[in-house]
Amino acid sequence: MKDLHVSRRAVLKGMGAMVALPWLEAMMPRTLLGAPAPALAPRRMAFMYVPNGIDMANWTPAAEGALATLPATMQPLAPFQKDLLVLSGLTLDKARPNGDGPGDHARAMASFLTGRQARKTHGADIRLGISVDQFAAQKIGHLTRFASLEIGCEGGKSSGNCDSGYSCAYSANLAWRTESSPVAKEVNPRQVFERLFSAPGKSDDKAARRQHYKQSILDFVGEDARQLKSRLGGPDQRKLDEYLTGVREIEQRLDRVEKTVDVVAPAGAARPTGVPKDYREHLRLMADMLVLAFQADLTRVATFVFANDGSNRSYRDYGVSEGHHDMSHHGGKKEKKAKVQKINQFHIEQVAYLLGKLKSIKEGNATLLDNCMLVYGSGISDGNRHNHNDLPILVAGKGGGTLKTGRHIRYAKETPLMNLYLNMLDRLDIHVDSFGDSKGRLASLEG
Image 1 (cartoon, rainbow, N blue to C red):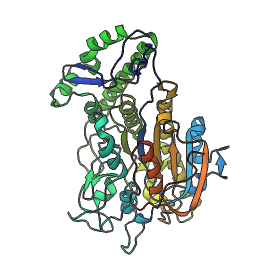
Image 2: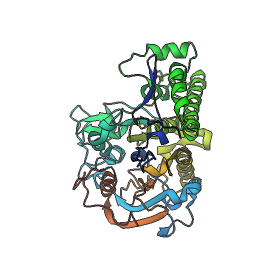
Image 3: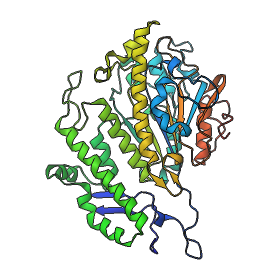
C-alpha cells in the first residue's frame, strides 16, 4: 500500500454529485512505525419487516443449539448458516389487544420496533413511541451523513382508517421519530439512489439532467476518482474499482426498470418513476441501496419494509395468485398454508440475496456482514391466529464479532422482543436500562 492516509469521511465530488468511499486499507490509523494499526469497522444495525406472520411449521428449527439443518423456509439461507441466529419464544405484548379489540396488523407493525401500545384512533391524535432505530439514530446519527435510512416496497397513507379503527400511519410505518411522528419510508429506488449520491443542498435538476443525457453519477466524479486511485495501493485500487462498478451497475438497472415501469397503481393513482413492476427486482434494488449505504458508511441504522402489515399483495409471478393476507387466514387448510410457505420462502430468498452482497464485501479481515446486525421478522406469528408470541425472529451478522451465530436459541415464554434490542444497542455503545416493554437483556447471544 502506498504511503497515503484517507479519511473515513472522504468523498468523491463533482457537479452536484457526492460519492462516499467504501472501507479502504488506507483509512486505517497508522502506528508510530508507519504500519497500519488495527482498526475496527463500524457496526451497523438494520430491521427487515414482513407482514401477516409466517408458516411456523416450516420456519422453526427442529432442535436448539447448532443449526445443523435449516427448516424448509430457510433453505435459501444455507450458504449463510454460520452467520445466523434463529430466536424462538420472543413476544410482542403491545401488539395484543390489551382491551382495544381488533386491529392486530396495525398493532403488530406499530409495536415491532417501539414496544409500545398504539393509541386506537384513525384521526390526527396518533400516539405510539420512538422506535429503536430512531433512538439509535439520535445517539450515533451524527457520525454519518444520514442518521438513518428508511426504505420499503409498499407505500401507504398517513391518515385514514386502515385496520379496525387504527390509523393507516400505524400499518404503513415501521420507524417513529417521536410518539406522534412516523418516519415515512422511500419506495422509489431512484429517489433512494439520488439521496445517497447527490451533494447536500442540490435540487433535483442535476439528477434530471443526468438522466436526460444518460450520464452516470460517476461521470461527474470521475476525475476525483482517478486522482485518488493513482495514490492508492493495489488492493485498495481493486476495492475502489469494484465499488464504483457496483454503483454503475445499479444505475444501469434503474435505467432499465424505468423503461418498463408500471405507471398505474392498483388504486388507479400514478406510481413514482422508478418503481419496478417486478416485486423481486424492487426488493433487490432496495437491498442494493442498503448495501451501498452501509458499505460507504453513509448510515449505520436502517429499516426495510418488504410490505405493510395486512398487505394483500399477490405473488402471481412466484406461484401464488391469491392475496397474501387472504392466504394467511388459512383456517388450517393445507393448500393455503403451502401458499403462505411459498411466499415466506420467496421473502427469504431476497434476504439471502442481501446477505450474499454483504458477505462479498471485505472490511479488513472481516466482511461487511460480520459487522452488521440484521433483524428479520414479523410482529405476528401465525397469520390465522393473529398471535404475537413465539415470533419468527432471525438475526444475521456477527455484530462486529460480538454475536455467536450459527445457532437456534429458544427463550422462555413471554420474553419481550425488546430485550433483543437492548443487546443490539449495547453493541452500538448505546447503553440504556430499558426500551419499550423490555424486562432485561437476552442471555446466551455471546455463547
